[in-house]
Length: 378
Image 1 (cartoon, one colour):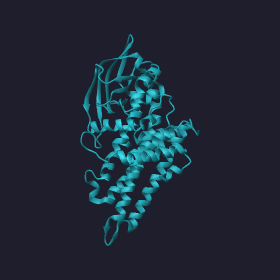
Image 2 (cartoon, one colour):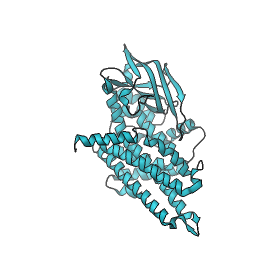
Image 3 (cartoon, one colour):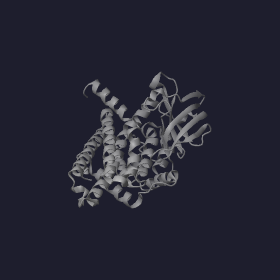
Image 4 (tube, one colour):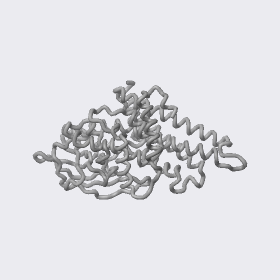
């Protein structure tokens, strides 16, 4: 926890991290498997009752990025599903927090913050992931309603969410300028959970299908054609937090690796006595601190009101790629035990892989960084 002494943080952030770490140690069991949907529902309720979700839900639009990052780092270190449950409440309701009307915020945000309503962010499509402007899901206006037709996929919380923030092509202009965002309640006629998707680190994930799905225009977030801006504003907040989650996974892997190195005996000494092990541990620690500096620089700068497009991309790229390296090294130190199902480092190995893809794959982050550099120094 020495990084909490860095000047990026205020005393309230240090207190938050300490309180959450104690709560998670006592309340969040490091368990996986079983009914994932039920586990996620339970974790959302626990996080709401514990008061942690209020940090991810703020109708004033002034979300504390450093707080979100510290919470995700801490939860990820304890339990990957707990981090997922927290993150999706924030991402799923983020557009409403940032740009929703007073009526929308009053209807949805308090329930999300209490853990009584599960949120989801529906942006990706089968042919539109990183290339958001290529989306085909469309909405046409008929009177006071929008009629949605199309598909969304890779939707986290799909199948268990109480509402979805759905981005559709509404045609005000070509490309990204012709997209709008709508809040669609689960159970709305014309919304179907077309497929539940199984992935290597299990969590609720689904493909959604919209067929003549009728949504009141009062459920639109922001003006017509502003959906892309709404989506990017939301991702700007939570992209840095993905990096923080990766940091939490890496820190847990480091803890496991240190314990293994100190206790595993071979050739009449411990694993830690080998210089090869020491060199690997040094590299792991340096990778973690390097990523942490980028993560909390980006979070601090955003809280200071600065544009962090480049810094957030750097943080996500460095933290997720670095965490993959750290976790892989930890698995190697465990030998055969490292690939046994349920062992902490094996679970971390499965959990980290998706973070290098979602909310902008590493290759996309490289393009963003280069684009920002080519614009000239800020």
